[in-house]
Length: 297
Ligand code: GDP
Image (tube, rainbow, N blue to C red; front, side):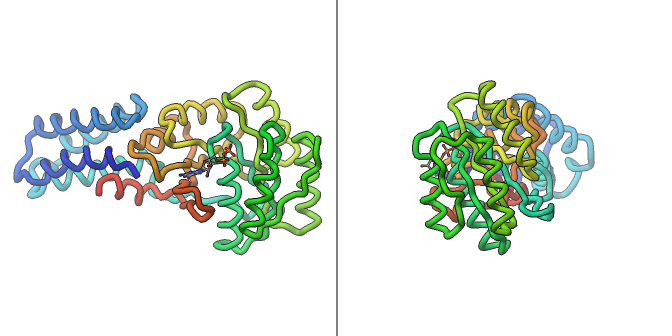
């Protein structure tokens, strides 16, 4: 995860740490290299600017340069700012204490990993939180999307809503609500349709589904490999539906990190989970401190 960014930053910081004394110019030179590394990692420009300004101001403005270990202190400042950029020191979990069935609505573009993530969450909620979940696919666009969720549900022994051919998403959502109540499910996971691009029809469908199911969580699933595009998709969605968080998939293959590092600042939405593989237990609560630790090695 983020290996190329981590390598680039590692080289800069090893050099800083190795120096006994640091001048203002040394810090500025190092920050120039960090700037290039972040831009190459596909981090959004305003985020890079804010980061570099914050680190430079803290490193130069305080007593850091006169201290005994200036290099280490600069690296500590970078670490703190990275954590901030990734969302702060809190791990943002799911709100599960609303009146059951708590509805978690999954939204996103086709191929982002939405269906897989729905099943991953079903499994996680069952195994780690002891919750009884019902999963329902509202995706009537992609052939076999509903069957895909049913197959995954069987693999993890989490119930799925029986498929009624020809039923439209809002009606499926209503039927899912009724079924969840009848089965006394704690959680209802709604896997909504995705499209190749954000468009009006998709947004209208999301809003209609949200209005009949009143979700506690609306999670946007985006592919971290798409970098700034993932952030743009998040911006488009958050203008239309009240997102409560983001799930970044394919973090296992993301050497760059641009989506993770830009998401919070650009969209204001927390990254709640990271998908780290194709298997159904490959999901982690997104912990900014741990991710920053991985980046800085
Ligand atoms: P959807 O169209 O958004 O529902 O996407 P799918 O859930 O069908 O996922 C598309 C592909 O991405 C599948 O082959 C998944 O196995 C794969 N996938 C989903 N999440 C991850 C992840 O976190 N890491 C990796 N490596 N693959 C993933």
